[in-house]
Length: 186
View 1: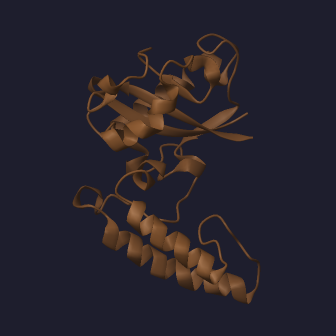
View 2: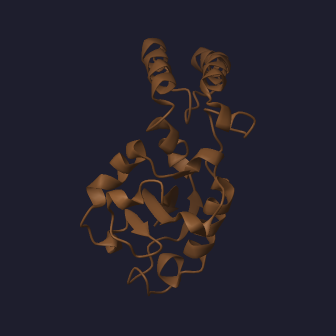
């Protein structure tokens, strides 16, 4: 079963999104309780994981990509076709999905903020690359804090959120922590 894990770490742990994703990957890979035999979480949480995975792009969808995501969702509903994560075999529906995917990628590319242009971001993503995409790690903003707010006062061992510095979730995370999305399997 796949689950989403939100991981935060101090801004000083990494200078870039790439470095933050590598830092989290390394921390989780070397924590025997996450993928091994007990410790930090108390028991192994995952048999494997990737940065982003099925949740790749979620941080963008919570921030700058809200508008384009709504356009794409509306198009999928209108067409009755899921563009990302679907395959309709050898059919007219699959041909239509492939055609729409080009349109959707164009919309997505036009919506990219300058800071993400030429960074390899696409709407339809490879969900199995170990280190995810540029937008799978972002500095916490007020908008992203909305994803963390449900974890205020929650025991980090619940397997849905962890701070690698053992800090309790608070608004102090805004602009001082990286937020990284992880897809793990157990």
